[in-house]
Image: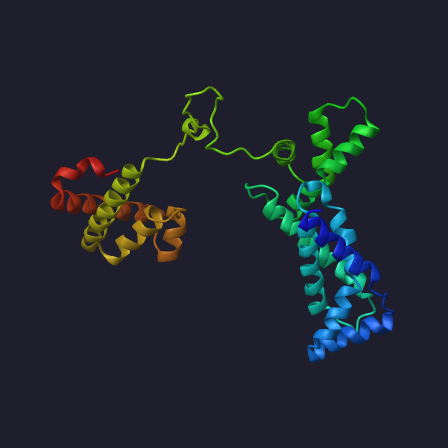
Length: 289
């Protein structure tokens, strides 16, 4: 018998033999743990609810992860529930703990099911854990339905984009593949999958060169801006140096002048800036807009 199988049987046996707690006993143990940090109370409370942990973990056994690990993560959620439970509320501890147990197990599955991290939003989690069930249900109710229509209905039910359903379906349909895996089983073949990946990103030397040139040009621009008046600098900042350019009319209202006057000041400022840049760097005309 494997060690993991033996451990699981020990956990199940201990859970089965643990006595059920009455509502009053739950309340007393929860209060003692919260107010006195009494470890014996926590141990008794958690042991009596291990049946619940095992039952919830069993619902996720088809995701290919060890049952012992699912139970362990569920126990973590159970302890979290014990720490957050408010005995004064008219709620049974098992009802409150179920949410934390399930959430802890689901987070574990999302972290470990694939080397590719999936979405962690509530809708993405819902899609991950309900896709197979919804596929089976729709297939049973609408025999012969095509894949496209099925994905549309799933997306509408969960509230996600059809593209998200397509992507999740592809992820769930096949295992992870290493980028270092050979493309061919032919002896002597040395090509890996990663050798054929195409990147649109610039080369490292192009990135460094662009950063150096960009910093140099910013330095020239800051120096050349000193030849402008404060009003000219303000107009150029609003019109040319911000992501969202202000309109001539908006600037004119702010400065108390007409938009035509703003346009004249802007043109004059650009001419002064161009002269200053050419004077400092006569061979850099090509860099100017």
